Length: 313
Length: 238
Image (tube, rainbow over all chains, first blue to last red; front, top):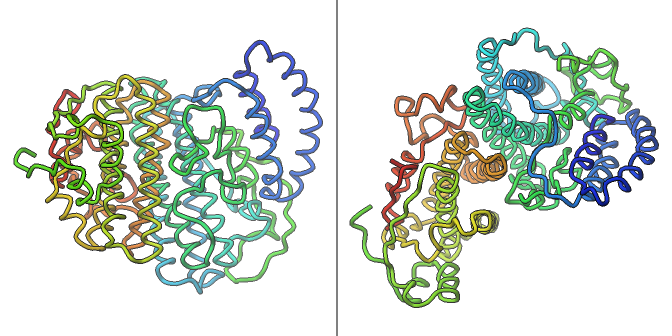
């Protein structure tokens, strides 16, 4: 949460014209300590509950900046760093679907229609393929795919504050969040890969080829939520989407690209994505581990522990 | 692309082919001389300007197709009609955006495009044909944007293309789901075979990837649909 706020602050500081910069900055800095204290409290609660509060606030801060920003204002990642980051997310996605496949066989998702089970299996295969192929590319960039680890039991309960594999409604909602975020995460890296010039071309091609498939997954999960559960959601992201529809800053303001409209998807920077994914990238407390049985889990979530593999970056 | 029938040149003729939206725009904004079909050749150079104009052409085709699909009256299911209308609106938004970004660099006006009536009629034949054509157009649009991405040099253009292509992929997935087809593209649906893919653009291929098509390959596919009379050339598509 701190990371995301700092990122928003940096973006604002970068964008603000010099005339208003110092005044706004001093105001922001005075608010920053208060906000961080607040965010730490929110962090004790579930990720999503926190999001509902933090996102509008973060967006408000971003809106203050008068200068169009069409780029992610963060340190430029190398192609190797992009692949390591992407591989982490893909390993998490592949693991997420593996658990869903298990829950569809004899757990909380056993009752979903066969068409939905086919989707779970198919999307899981796609994510596993991404893991395989990104892992094969990484050594050529000087990296080691085996060094990119996710927890044995990622804390998926951090997303909704409960086991997402216990019933179709929770699973598909989390699936929507995960896939939409995956799309935004890949989109957030295309400029970094372009900046790498020829050295980034192959990874850019790979990232683009994956990016739109994640969007197809997102569309498919959204379609299932609508057709199976009657959720008021479309394959595309709504204009001015709420924080209950997307968990990242989809409606980024101040860009020449109209991200808040339905025809344009937003992006997320690495620090924004990791702030959201960080709580999941911790070992789940025993009480929150998904079980094969559709046992309702208590909605109390442990705060993230300190063994986060975010140190990888 | 050389022997298509001439399009009707009157306002009434355009309405007849269901392009009332396009026709209205043309009549409202262009002199009569421009309404008469000139079969303007579209020349796309291998640079950012050419790529964005090529993207604009694809968006114009999609927008015109969805407008015609709505007007055809062949889509009666309310959810399907809602999709077709919404997708058409989003493609129109892409057209508006690209024209705005290109500004003086726009190579053609909407009215410069000459649609082939027989070709349009064929893809508007019935509900199944319309929705399956939508899948083809959206799938090809995704491959086309992906393929153009690594050639763009302006980072804002690349981000904008990324912002659009994932929406095209959502369209493809959504219409595929409506039809009960898989939301990702099976290799058997792909119009460019593995052997014909440009190797340098495609480190990965298969269902888990939306392969990168070259502009030349996209032009060949668009040509095979038989809906556009304008000749296309230039270094981008050579």
